[in-house]
Amino acid sequence: MPLPSQKVLEIIKKHSDLEKDLSSSNLDSKSFAQKSKEYSSLNDIIKFAIEYSNFDSSKKDLEKIISDSSVEEEMKEMAKNELQDLEKKHKENEIKLKIFLLPKDEADAKNAILEIRAGTGGLEASLFASDLFKMYEKICNRKNWILEIISLSKSDAGGLKEVIASIKGKNIYSLLKYESGVHRVQRVPDTETQGRVHTSAATVAVLPEAEEVDVKIEDKDLRIDVFRSSGPGGQSVNTTDSAVRVTHIPSGIVVSQQDEKSQIRNREKALKILRSRLYEFERKKIDEERSQDRKSKIGTGDRSERIRTYNFPQGRVTDHRINLTLHKLEEFMQGEIFDEVIEDLNLQAQEELLEQLN
Image (cartoon, rainbow, N blue to C red; front, side, top):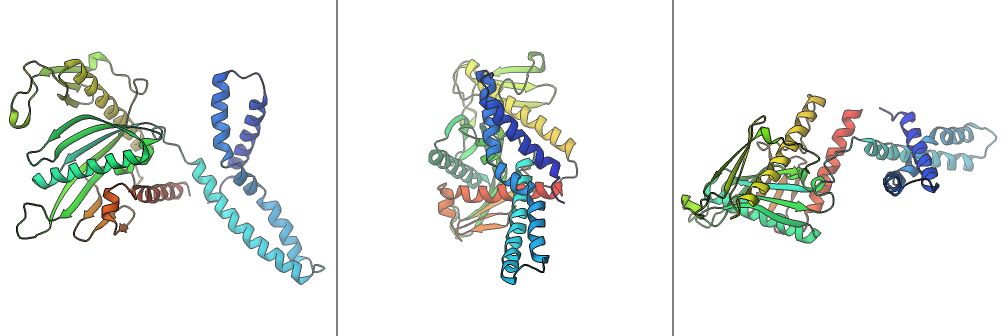
């Protein structure tokens, strides 16, 4: 389905209007910053919009040369080649413009809350959950993102039953949102004496970190219980009731925190996680209402969905959503080729959205 010409003309007009506004001295600093941001965004696409808008007239000029009997054959051949290039460029410009016009996810620019939990597979699953968390730590170090552990629960084997962390940086959620789902591992555990390959799993959930302005939580909607913190095996690690359990009554979402010795700090952390879970809950509800028939395999955040397999004996990692297999498992676990997979996931997500527009 061709892109409506009116949409393209609107881009060109908007760019021109912003250019005039920014050259005016009547803007306050806030308006100038906002318009500058819009102008910068349009600058990336304006060249393609103008070329797309001029396509019909350029095509007619070339076709006129080709059909003119008085024009030399050599000139006609050049016009034919130029027309082929023009049509190819037109299709490329159309895709670029469609991607630009896709609805923007307001959460993409936000920081993220990362939650990893050991799944099926017992102690081996907890060791894999720990390996996944180390992988994300290495990615953060490479990208100069700030990772802060909110809560952490260790297993008897030295792995992780659960870890929740916040990750801060530029456009974090847009880069990590496709990590949500079931991550499966196939390898020989250290405790395996027969050399058999075991399969276990861990779930990853990535939520956009919500600010107070994003989610309004009423005190009347909360039930807050305090209790004594407990360590592995249920042993008491604190003689005061510093642990906090926050229940959001309307949604039924429950968050517990006991990592800090201070009840106040545990309450702050619990509310931070609750806010992000409520924000994501509302986003999903709105998304489902808008597109009930959408069958996107990318970024659904469905934890029952197996998204990736890490096969250690064969040294490969497979992303099942895009049928991508890389025989570079060690590099992937070190965070070295994470961007390669994310780029492919982003590309497929854009293609699926474009199909919905057609």
